[in-house]
Image (cartoon, rainbow, N blue to C red):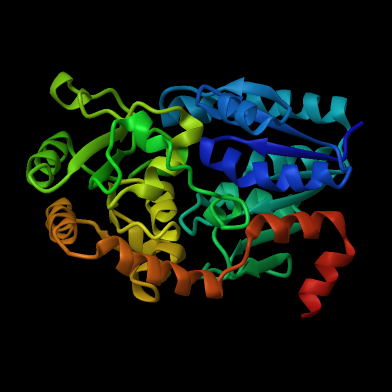
Amino acid sequence: MIDCAFFIHTPAQAHLWAQVMKKLIARGISAVAIIRGGYDISHLLEAYKLPSVTYGISAKTSHLKIIQLPGHFFTACSLLKAYEPSMVIGTGPVEATAAAILRKTCVIFEDSEPTPGLERSLWKRFSGAILTPSCFSLDLGNKHIRIPSYKELSYLHPNHFIPDPSVLRELGVNPGEKYAILRFNAFDAVHDIGRKGFSLNDKYKLVKTLEPFTRIFISSEDPLPEDLDKYRLAVAVHRIHHVLNYAHLLVADTGTMATEAAVLGVPSVMCLSNYHEFGNFRELESDYGLMFCFNSSASAIEKAVELIQQPNLKQDWSKKKEKLLLHKIDLAGFIAGLIIKWPESFYELKAD
């Protein structure tokens, strides 16, 4: 038997739940991560020194991932039956449905308003609590708890994240040398169906227009052409946030890293066709000025070139970050407290 089982489907979720797991384990509460393979999740959990078991391997395309769901679901049920956790924690319908069948309490964290309707209906029906950032625009009913934070502040809050300047030596970057990170999504996840970011031509244009002003590193989920691959960021997956922290600019078509840059005080430019559907992007842009969002690649590239030429860019964004942190809390600490005191914690929060 184990106290808590955390379902992890993506590297971002590995970071999200790792700090919560560490806090629980430090309090003598046993926890295991049940993960989907095929990404860098196992390597991240090894770096965090956390136990994990795989429930399935991720397919290469969104449609194949949908086909995989029944098999993954039955494996998840088998693992939950073997571990017999008191509580299941995750972000999606597999864990919520499996927990319901085995009569386990399930807590879901959700930060994406455009989640598919079927997925949302499953975890709304079967979870015991639904946690979202306070900027989440939808009302998810009487199980809904809004938290003044973002998922990225589970692992990048100053309570947990201490930047390591030695990563600059790994990159061959001199102290104070300006560099930008370009992050490109593969758009192969189920939730990415219908979304668009930078085309291959856009990627070439980004490099060409930014390179006169800054050194460039590219992080890409898809393979790159040979002439772009020379810019590829070569660093261990668990070191990426240290690299990001010292960057002068991030340009991305994926929301997680764009938000990570923003909460670290790094100017963040995002090109995503449906960015306006996400409360966290709208808030980071309109309330804090930490992110700039576009559905036009040309506008995103223009803003990136404008920003990288601004003097005192890092200092100005550091002040914006401090303002953000005055209004946001350590998400990992909040969720760990919720789990430790469950179910009293849930009733107290709903009464407040």
